[in-house]
Length: 95
Picture 1 (tube, rainbow, N blue to C red):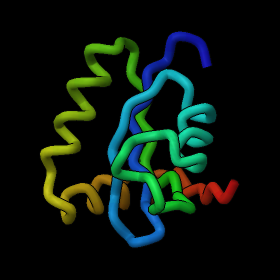
Picture 2: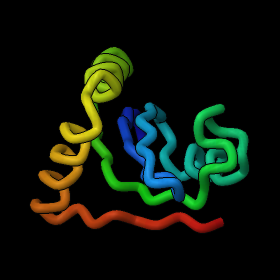
Picture 3: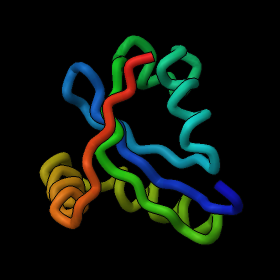
Picture 4: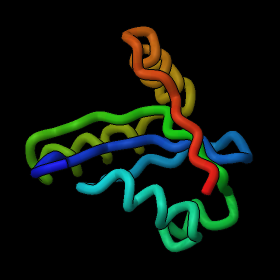
């Protein structure tokens, strides 16, 4: 995955959304599923990756993560729907 920086949203089994940052999406999802990701996601799996954005720098990615975290749920859902409308399908992770 090179030097990419990812901002992502997971839909948890309780239908809540979690927003995070990583440089290794596959590894981060494994951590979430194993209960070693964020405190918020512990016990909330399985997860569905519903949003993924790639940025060039850590600073840009962390700023974008904070922008998304400040959004209300409805705005996050609109962002997710916009991404799905251009062809990004959600991906379910059951590990």
